[in-house]
Image (cartoon, rainbow, N blue to C red; front, top):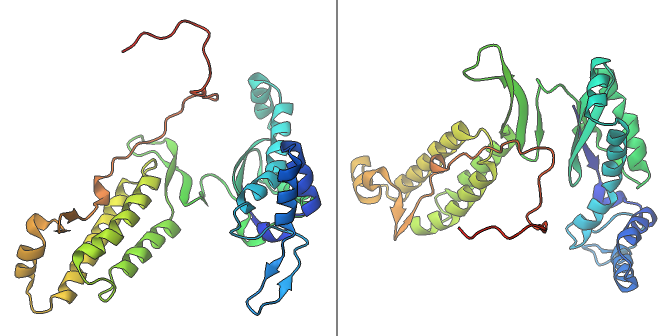
Length: 308
């Protein structure tokens, strides 16, 4: 595996190379003029001075993510050409038996992973290859976020930890597991810790209104992985943080009275709002659906399907 990230992506994109790629996609001259003006608009610093922008796109600008994605299509095109050069499936299998390397790219914005079937030397050779492709757009690899690793070691991507481990319940076999990374777990715990500080909310209703969307959004993102144990852990942590918040808000009450008044049946609820419980989220694992997934908008030439 070749796990990589692009450093200063929004600061160093070459305007000329980027506009060439934009012109390949957009024919409207008015839109092209708008994009060009956006790139050359400059940066107004806090002291009121204006700085000209020769390279890069304004970070957090409305067009910046789209333009960065267009620039990084050079990686997609490069590895797609390499993959197509390997030929059909039977020739790729023949190459694997001959210990010849084959690789595929997975990219999301400026984070990407190159999966390679080969030796570590084959993976390390990708440093120069990827660097040369990015140099055409004025970009370079982030040294402290780029590494070569084996799938047994695992790697983090978009908040997930992806690693081949022993297959639970099947002795001697291994499977690739995807589950929330430690960094993602620390992030949600820090948010819960911040939202459950004593002076942050006046009532339990206010606390639940702020906390529930955070827990629900985090769980919905990770519910397609092996996340059951992590959800139980987050649920336990959030529950007792709220209990601790209640104890600090009602110092004069003992635990028995606190449970009777504010935790009926050990449920945290107030004014019709109940705490969202992460452990109740259903895990829905993604299943392999083939190399080509048909689009739902494809028109069919046959007769319409009978109504259900």
